[in-house]
Length: 63
Image: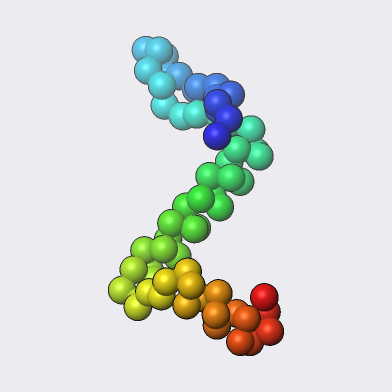
């Protein structure tokens, strides 16, 4: 992951109150948050091994 090129908004006391980041970095963060939300939603679902997935994809003609 690349280093963010952030800028800060500070109040009259010099305390950081907000951050400005390039839109591309913001969109990447939103995508990461979305991915993590999906993972959390599916946490209780049963899992299968990679080999089982591969066989299923082959059987369905997708691999």
